[in-house]
Length: 148
Image 1 (cartoon, rainbow, N blue to C red):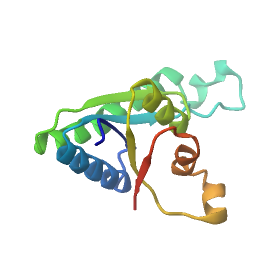
Image 2 (tube, rainbow, N blue to C red):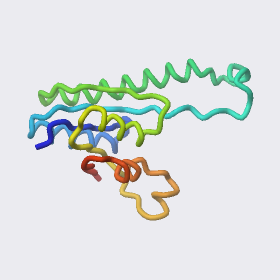
Image 3 (cartoon, one colour):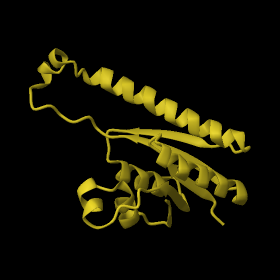
Protein backbone atom coordinates (compact mmCIF):
# COMPACT_ATOMS: atom_id res chain seq x y z
CA UNK A 1 0.00 0.00 0.00
CA UNK A 2 2.70 2.48 0.97
CA UNK A 3 5.63 2.05 -1.36
CA UNK A 4 7.96 4.55 0.35
CA UNK A 5 7.65 5.71 3.96
CA UNK A 6 9.52 8.75 5.24
CA UNK A 7 10.22 8.75 8.98
CA UNK A 8 11.58 11.95 10.56
CA UNK A 9 13.36 11.76 13.91
CA UNK A 10 15.24 14.09 16.21
CA UNK A 11 16.49 11.24 18.37
CA UNK A 12 14.12 11.99 21.24
CA UNK A 13 12.14 9.37 23.12
CA UNK A 14 8.96 10.75 21.59
CA UNK A 15 10.35 10.64 18.04
CA UNK A 16 11.38 7.04 18.63
CA UNK A 17 7.69 6.14 18.91
CA UNK A 18 7.24 7.43 15.36
CA UNK A 19 10.32 5.53 14.19
CA UNK A 20 9.13 2.29 15.76
CA UNK A 21 5.62 2.64 14.34
CA UNK A 22 6.88 3.59 10.89
CA UNK A 23 9.28 0.66 10.82
CA UNK A 24 6.60 -1.81 11.89
CA UNK A 25 4.28 -0.42 9.22
CA UNK A 26 7.00 -0.78 6.58
CA UNK A 27 7.71 -4.30 7.78
CA UNK A 28 4.07 -5.18 7.18
CA UNK A 29 3.91 -3.58 3.73
CA UNK A 30 7.42 -4.36 2.58
CA UNK A 31 7.93 -0.83 1.31
CA UNK A 32 11.04 1.32 1.10
CA UNK A 33 11.94 3.44 4.14
CA UNK A 34 13.91 6.66 4.44
CA UNK A 35 14.73 7.99 7.90
CA UNK A 36 15.60 11.67 8.10
CA UNK A 37 16.98 13.93 10.79
CA UNK A 38 17.22 17.67 10.29
CA UNK A 39 19.62 20.07 11.93
CA UNK A 40 18.29 23.60 12.06
CA UNK A 41 20.59 26.49 11.33
CA UNK A 42 22.38 27.66 14.45
CA UNK A 43 21.11 30.99 15.71
CA UNK A 44 23.12 33.94 14.44
CA UNK A 45 24.67 35.89 17.29
CA UNK A 46 24.09 39.62 17.49
CA UNK A 47 27.83 40.20 17.45
CA UNK A 48 29.93 40.26 14.30
CA UNK A 49 31.01 37.04 12.62
CA UNK A 50 34.62 37.66 13.68
CA UNK A 51 33.48 37.55 17.30
CA UNK A 52 32.21 33.95 17.13
CA UNK A 53 35.51 32.40 18.14
CA UNK A 54 35.91 34.78 21.07
CA UNK A 55 32.67 33.61 22.66
CA UNK A 56 33.22 29.91 21.93
CA UNK A 57 30.72 29.66 19.10
CA UNK A 58 32.90 28.52 16.21
CA UNK A 59 30.40 27.74 13.40
CA UNK A 60 32.56 24.89 12.04
CA UNK A 61 32.68 23.23 15.45
CA UNK A 62 28.91 23.63 15.83
CA UNK A 63 28.35 22.05 12.41
CA UNK A 64 30.70 19.18 13.26
CA UNK A 65 28.84 18.59 16.52
CA UNK A 66 25.51 18.65 14.65
CA UNK A 67 26.85 16.13 12.14
CA UNK A 68 28.10 13.78 14.87
CA UNK A 69 24.76 14.05 16.70
CA UNK A 70 22.83 13.35 13.49
CA UNK A 71 25.00 10.31 12.73
CA UNK A 72 24.26 8.93 16.20
CA UNK A 73 20.51 9.47 15.74
CA UNK A 74 20.49 7.84 12.32
CA UNK A 75 22.70 4.95 13.42
CA UNK A 76 20.28 4.13 16.25
CA UNK A 77 17.28 4.28 13.89
CA UNK A 78 19.07 2.13 11.31
CA UNK A 79 19.95 -0.42 14.00
CA UNK A 80 16.28 -0.59 15.03
CA UNK A 81 15.33 -1.24 11.39
CA UNK A 82 17.98 -3.91 10.94
CA UNK A 83 16.82 -5.59 14.15
CA UNK A 84 13.48 -6.35 12.46
CA UNK A 85 15.06 -7.19 9.10
CA UNK A 86 14.53 -3.91 7.24
CA UNK A 87 17.04 -2.07 5.13
CA UNK A 88 16.61 1.70 5.30
CA UNK A 89 18.13 4.76 3.74
CA UNK A 90 19.18 7.49 6.15
CA UNK A 91 19.48 11.19 5.45
CA UNK A 92 20.80 14.19 7.38
CA UNK A 93 19.75 17.63 6.17
CA UNK A 94 21.34 20.75 7.65
CA UNK A 95 20.58 24.43 8.07
CA UNK A 96 16.90 24.35 7.13
CA UNK A 97 13.54 24.26 8.85
CA UNK A 98 12.76 20.67 9.84
CA UNK A 99 9.22 20.81 8.47
CA UNK A 100 10.35 22.28 5.14
CA UNK A 101 13.09 19.66 4.81
CA UNK A 102 10.71 16.81 5.60
CA UNK A 103 8.19 17.94 2.99
CA UNK A 104 10.92 18.62 0.42
CA UNK A 105 12.49 15.18 0.88
CA UNK A 106 9.06 13.52 0.67
CA UNK A 107 8.41 15.26 -2.67
CA UNK A 108 11.87 14.66 -4.15
CA UNK A 109 12.00 10.99 -3.16
CA UNK A 110 8.47 10.10 -4.21
CA UNK A 111 7.40 9.09 -0.71
CA UNK A 112 3.83 7.88 -0.27
CA UNK A 113 3.53 8.43 3.51
CA UNK A 114 5.20 10.39 6.29
CA UNK A 115 5.11 8.82 9.76
CA UNK A 116 6.06 11.06 12.66
CA UNK A 117 5.43 11.50 16.36
CA UNK A 118 3.79 14.49 18.02
CA UNK A 119 3.28 15.87 21.50
CA UNK A 120 -0.40 16.39 20.64
CA UNK A 121 -0.27 20.05 21.57
CA UNK A 122 -3.31 22.03 20.53
CA UNK A 123 -4.48 25.58 20.16
CA UNK A 124 -2.23 28.38 21.31
CA UNK A 125 0.40 25.96 22.69
CA UNK A 126 0.91 24.59 19.19
CA UNK A 127 1.25 28.08 17.72
CA UNK A 128 3.56 29.37 20.41
CA UNK A 129 5.76 26.29 20.38
CA UNK A 130 6.06 26.24 16.59
CA UNK A 131 4.94 22.67 16.00
CA UNK A 132 6.93 21.10 13.17
CA UNK A 133 4.25 18.43 12.96
CA UNK A 134 1.54 21.02 12.34
CA UNK A 135 3.61 22.59 9.57
CA UNK A 136 4.24 19.22 7.91
CA UNK A 137 0.51 18.45 8.11
CA UNK A 138 -0.33 21.79 6.52
CA UNK A 139 2.17 21.56 3.66
CA UNK A 140 2.77 17.89 2.82
CA UNK A 141 1.32 16.73 -0.51
CA UNK A 142 1.03 13.16 0.80
CA UNK A 143 -0.65 11.56 3.83
CA UNK A 144 0.96 12.15 7.22
CA UNK A 145 0.42 9.59 9.98
CA UNK A 146 0.85 11.12 13.43
CA UNK A 147 1.87 8.80 16.26
CA UNK A 148 1.02 10.13 19.76
